[in-house]
Image 1 (cartoon, rainbow, N blue to C red):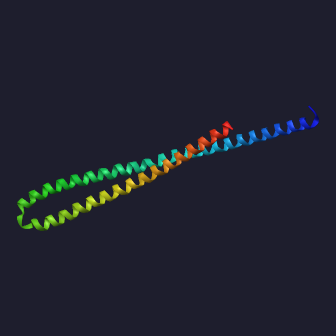
Image 2: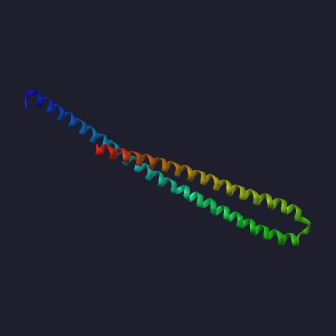
Image 3: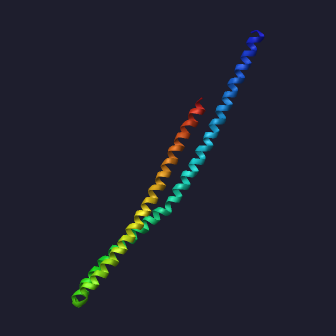
Length: 143
């Protein structure tokens, strides 16, 4: 080798080493981002648990409201038999109360379901971003 060839070989080796160092740095940054996103996904999954509990509670309230309505209707039938003169007024009030209870429970259930869907959407977005970054990190490590 002459001096120019040796200088070119050294320069080429340094350039390759710099590229490898940069690729390793980028891969490490991507791995750090994946770790952060994984942590965020776990946090979101944990934060979804209260919404699941809210959904369960709303369903229980809805079921209880339906059971109360069933019991109320049964009681109303018996009272109507005993108090024929007050039947029309009683039925009107009873129906309004039952409808209000059912409407409130259904509204709570709908809101809880919407919250759960939003959290699940965010979890999916973060998982997809994590997978994309993971794939990019793997590509960078291969380079």
